[in-house]
Length: 261
Image (cartoon, rainbow, N blue to C red; front, side, top):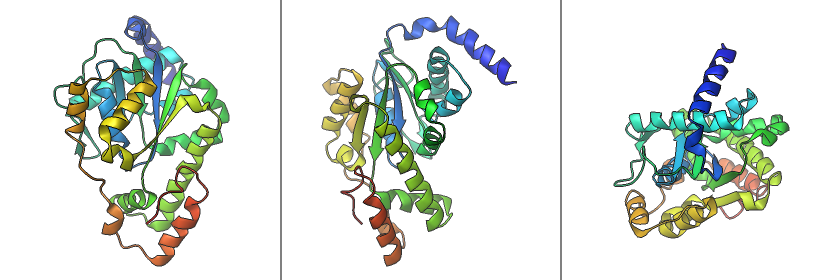
């Protein structure tokens, strides 16, 4: 079955190869569930020169040996599902008014945003990094770990230990990726900074991806961003022991060290 699916992907990608004749990079979001990266991905997807697929499992296709051309086309094909689903991801609607979700001029950037659990395979199978599409740029989005875990425990209800281990295993995977790619190919973005200074952070991210911005694009993107981060940690019953355990673990990661309860 996989051979048939792969053969179809090959045929379709060859038939649509012209779509990516001007593509400069593949954008790979590495982040964490409940980190706000669906919002950021939607904003880049709204740019006239970008297509970002929500929840396209690119790691699975890398492990199956799909080539760069096939992955780009399958990413593009998957992006259409988001538009047909009324721009809804995880129960939230991410429609940017007046912009280019579902349309584009030239595709300069193609990419995907998928919850970070899949990134664990990069540690288990280090050769996967050598299989990523050419000129891949990574976007690493962080958010207060207490807020992320509060949201995870509230939604999935699997207990503190499960979500503690899951969150920090994804941190380990993203740290591995960061240590094994060039600094120039990764953009670090704090969710809290994004909410407080959205125009500045959107412009910095677009510059990193080689995308030009204009006031109308920035204003429309900012229109769907809340005025302050949702601090979910205050809505969950954290014990002193749980808080301290997360605090100690945070110290292992430079990209988390400024976060506190």
